[in-house]
Image 1 (tube, rainbow, N blue to C red):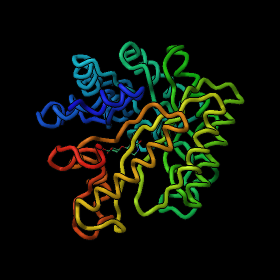
Image 2: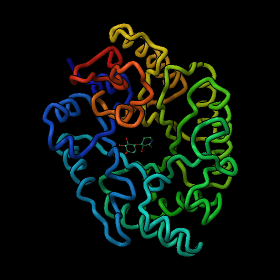
Image 3: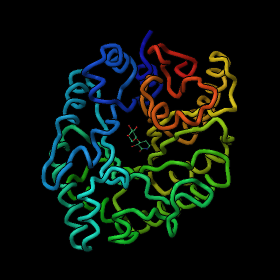
Length: 332
Ligand code: XIL
């Protein structure tokens, strides 16, 4: 049977997934799964600052190139992730950004210029700023002062750093798709409602200032323990699109938590129903691109970073392919 990306394409959608260069090179079953299913590839960390510029002025494109070359050989485009992300700065960059406004600007300019000049013929779509919106109170992440995250560039340049970043990216190439990517806006909780309000505020402010932004990326790291309301979510996406931007789903996956059945078959079914409701609501609101954060359960970041969330010892099943690389209910 055809892969997800072909099925999606046949219905006017794009499907792709985040990928790891080292796995692509070392695990033939993993590579085969991507070849079969993924129409677009997103570097899971190979496009981040710490990988591309680990030391000031010393750039390393080898891992990103590996993904681009693998994709080019199979006609699969790569999208860029991410130019500015607070979690991906090496220590030298955090220190340099903190020195002065002028230094912060020149560090950003140097990174953007080199990365976009090097990749712009092969990567046409970038997450320019990732996770700019601060988490509302009630989460376990550190509190920021206002609606925007208290990140290195925010501290150096104020809220205008986002505008600066998009303008710098646009200067490198007038036709790149420039995306503002964020999380936590998908579900029907007061926390997510506040996060939606903040993201929409930011989007409207950028649009009003004519900042060159083309789309909003919705990460969509879903959690079964939270309720999902397709009407609420759909209205939010429509509000973004009413500002003239498109919306992509950029990092879809799901954490089952403890509220799902232990039995894998039953669990996969309820999880797939949730994913289905999410995709339908997004598609009805005009989303045409769906990217998952990984493809094979075994390699999901939820296994590494959220394993503690599952107390029953069962393995996370966050993605369309199971631990043995087989298509499961979510794939369908
Ligand atoms: C994660 C990767 O999956 C991990 O392998 C890495 O160690 C940390 O970053 N939101 C994002 C992604 O935008 O960049 C994150 O990726 C997952 C959450």
